[in-house]
Length: 428
Image (cartoon, rainbow, N blue to C red):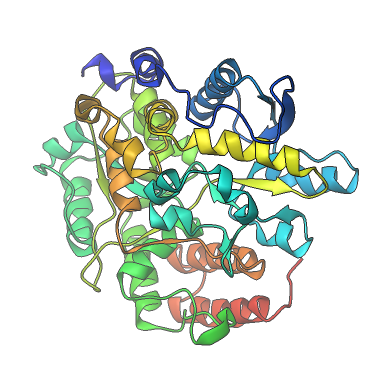
């Protein structure tokens, strides 16, 4: 396999993409010519993994090219710690938090970005993919602007598929089931399919089978007592019962995939980088978007961290933060992020700034970016109660697929619990 598949060269070859990363918004309007506004930024990725290394490099680049704004980066679990820091009077100005921002909104912890958009050029905003721009928007107010969008995709070992006589992943879920059965038969000892049993990887096939997140107005009821849910749960139950699929976590899937033990591995755009790195060039790797369901199309769900402004800071601080995110969405910065982090760029201009030659050896980024542009890719729900709905979904799916309960029983319990959570009752 070409060394371009390896992770390390991405950090050297892509450096040219960042050259001249400065934006037109070099000086914040909040500072005088002799002042520098220093703001704290809490970011959740580990400093030693690809996203953490990329964000560290970009923050240093920003600080070198902007005279009047300085970003003080802290690597920490902002999604979990920022509310506690706010209560202690030590919250950052800006943070990356997950899609569970309903907790922050309920605590009145966030400032809307809307009033600071004058410092965020319209061309940059308009370049952001709509599903990304709408992620974190509540009643027209942008409380969280998504930074590292993840979507689900399938990565496969081309060598193992070739042994089974399969040239590429099929277009539909039905065809995929046929292929994993062939892999089990013709390549014994290999796991045909490894799946992540989390809501972000359950809901896309459910949506592609005609499912919907909510039933009726007001987002107070779900729609799991439906043909789409039954079809989706039964599909994965059959794969599991025929020993054609296993459940596992992302890091374990990456390790086993890299060791050549898995033919097809479920994951995300960021997980693709981990699998490529784990393989160390031992075999050629392919990547594909999720197959189409009975609705006639594929579907996906966007997850990931986003920029938020915490309350109790000054307008000067917020304007400085806007200078930083405006720079973040410029084409060259987005291209660098997309070629170094494992996450796709979230702007059209950022995607266009990546050389086509890069995608020839790193197709995962392109597959993810294509999913972000699909009309059938949606944002994860914002309501606080949906966090508990997703937890209940994970449990119901696992129990039904592994045979601990019937599909009908699992969906009945899931519907009752989910409706209860959305109505305001909590399992916590």
